[in-house]
Length: 329
Image (tube, rainbow, N blue to C red; front, side, top):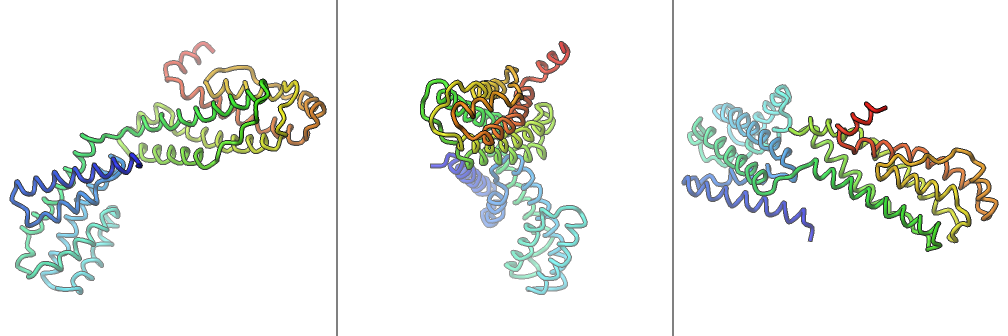
């Protein structure tokens, strides 16, 4: 069972239960549909998105109710709905509230259920806005109190998962070179790409949320760009490794040095940068009868991968440590 789906289902069910309880306690059961609809629309997987959806829902309810009320004093039925939408959409666009257009249009259609113009008065519009606010506040409160979500913590966890996957793969390559074990198969691209896309989504969400200052302080936009570069070069590097023969090489000096350098950069250690001299690679190709072009391409692809992992190792350190290191330099 997907834990994320369970979390979202529990959040929605809890918010709907509390909304119904508040509506029953306030004796507003007749209009329970409005706060419940607000809960369903507002509850989101991300708490910051929930707040944005709530504000759009309230604005759409207020503007849609006012415009529809004014129009329905003159026109009724579907003609009134059409004229209301023709006024609502340009008005919301002019005000910069495009996210509230869906709610405003839905409210305009729902007002067709009003049996007479007498019922559609200012009191009715204000009460429906209050119903919506109640549903929005309960949805936000349930999300923040019972199932709070920290996007920065999720970013750290996603990055740690990527580091662990790459570190295990490098250790497997090391055992292939040094101990003669079977050469590991390349990591499947789908899980790596999924983790990277998740990190991109979290960074975009946090940049629009209240923790954007902390996001910049931890240098996450720069770390994300380095992970994108590392992801690309890692896939290319492993494709080249897959073109090498299955049998472990004899005296694999340049390959072993490259694996050690990659492991050091991934762990945040400076390590020793491999030599760019092509002669060790030529000797390795001649000794093992391996394709020289593949080995030289492997050495060339290794350089940007080392740079990306090295930059990630530096940025992952706390800011005070980076500052002290720069002071010593």
